[in-house]
Image (cartoon, rainbow, N blue to C red; front, side, top):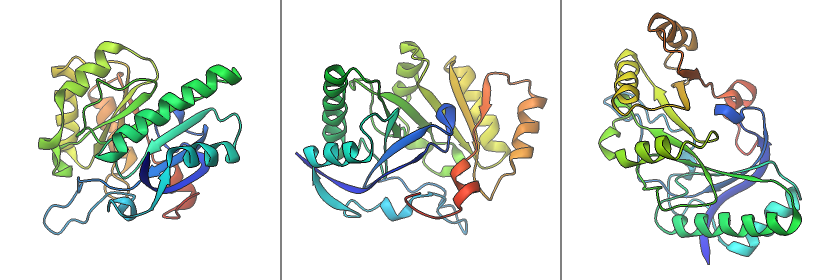
Length: 234
């Protein structure tokens, strides 16, 4: 079994509830969404180099597992990201990789969390052995019509305290829509409010959260950008 992998490396998680946690990143190539392209506004995807399905090298499943093992024999978290790790051939590859990693954990007795960072446009209810960072694309992304709403209900109802739903917020319209989605679907758990880096001040977003008394929202900054800027593979 093969898929196109852009890079595999060790760093710390930059976002969400696992911010700062040492993590092995497995970045897949290929994503059909183009977030943020609106008139003269630029594409805001922070990994445009992984958007093409050919932006990497074909790797066998066992080679990916071997490379993960060469980085760390006992990683706390493995993050499958992209690109989009659940799109096209990446999907079955990611699912099989998670299953293989589960089997290796059972043999070794170690604990490793497999987290999938997905764009919300791919179904997730049939997937096992992973926790989810699920994006909900807001109006400012131009991709809201691609969202699979069943994903929100799935994450809400399975009530895994490691799952998270992320709202990347560009402006006040996006913030108001975030509240509509949370309230409309009665979402709970780890609900992340993340300002578009360089477009919305974190201070402004925090003020909106406070003004609306949204104690259910957690501010999530892209910590890696504050540390390394636009450097890749760090």
